[in-house]
Length: 507
Image (cartoon, rainbow, N blue to C red; front, side):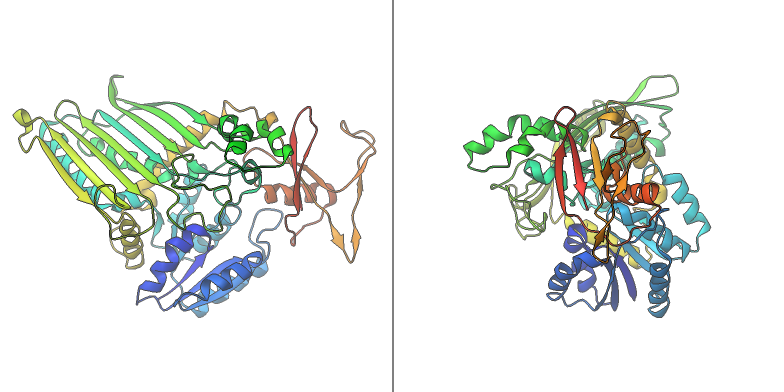
């Protein structure tokens, strides 16, 4: 079997690359990525036994955010030549929708590791009209043996006694300790594009919540109304207490300009999110109360002052997940997962990869043992199982059809949070040095412009809220010069306007 992999970033490197090299029935992989990643990819792939062909593209999209025709034709030829029917999409936001559209248009099955929010209905309709048979969003918690065991135990009680799950508390903590300058330019789970923790390692826990509320639905306890309250912890909150003074205590330093502009970080994606969700029945009685806690500023086992090339490598980050779930006075289940390195044989309590379940029963009513403990390990095995099922066309636990509840909850949370942000405070801009045969383009602003009339400057402008930096660059250049830029790369970022604090990304 041949397949195509779009994007070989840290997540794909950690998971997909190993899986594809390990499975004997994978013959060849077409790996599609950016030309700017050539050196890194060639170094990485030289260490693998995977049979692959590397297809490096320059800028993907034209001014209308569609895949350039020359690249679409090139991809179609590769798909036809290699009889490809399966795709993995693990690219950044700018390329994600382009590759997804290409796959559905050409009838290629898709598994993606990025959740879909606003485009859900549109993409679902695309899939229904496509000849592709499978569309999955990676949801590894559904495939985890530990969470499957919990679901089985809860379903028995809800089904037998015809009462709903009443409480679900889910908490996740990971650790990435960035310096302020990295928060402005980081491309790995970047905050600056208006997404970050919420749309990356946090999403499986939204899906885990849906995984458990489905039990109520299956036994006739459907909710008719869902209300949500949320708060967040932003990078500027973090650096208020873990900033300059703290850095001096641990002997690390940043340029003063980054400390002087920390308030800009309040417009970036949150480092931690807290949400309370109340599910109500048709009579407006509370059916289930749920709480989600997602944190990116969690425990590290050693200092991490420099963002590594691979944020998944090594055991500095300690990933922890907690679950506390109850069916009234009948049963309470608590689970604790701990992972400080990617894989290990140490599955004992306090080890490097451990998942423990404790079940507390009201034995006078439901019988069984009053306290029961289950041990599981190797959390990443669930992700491998899910991938294997996808490639072998087995029953899916992560179909796009099953993601609707989690995705709608995620979209509601984003809306809830964005209403607290003033979009006029989203102070990011782009500028472009256009070089043509050694000459640079300068533009003169209109004499009637409200800001800086008659001034000569290079093309550029403001980044819209939730708009990618390079997406804004392409749009502004088209608006101001009617030119479609294709070849560009990041040069620097500068802070301007002390009164209003703005950061400008220069390309």
